[in-house]
Image (tube, rainbow, N blue to C red; front, top):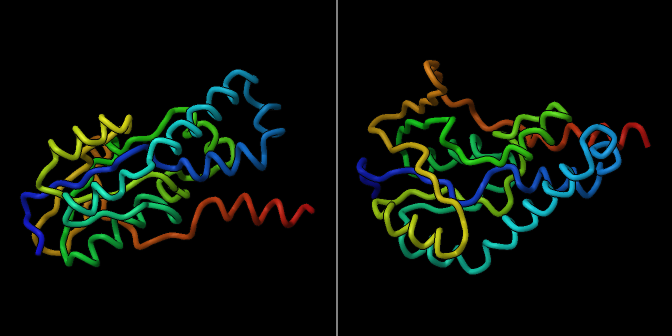
Length: 186
């Protein structure tokens, strides 16, 4: 049973899996568009963020009402699945979802929406113990951001500055656009 006082958190940054795949599989294109040092820094940041997760999921299971690796289809699809599983509404602040600027730029280069992109190594968590979750995340070297809260009912709202909209149903994994394009030209 969830309580409406519980908050929604993202541990680590989103779209890391998509950025890693592009860095590993489309590096030449990236290096022809971005400066070499940008690509190198982005690669190091992604590797670092992915390497920090380690045993952290055990903490999530102990302290959280809900916790899952975001994985495929991205954060917005994970939020939908979470709301379905918990039979709850939610309110999310899109600008509070953690993402590296390098990841944004890499995905934009391929016209991919980072909010529907592969997010291996990032976790969605619901807990009433936000302070403990944030402290444990920092101790592990991970970011932890409160992105919203549970709400009574079924409304799933997403706030982006002055704009308010409803959460869309899960969308296809954004990285498939790049993978399908690659297959079409080979």
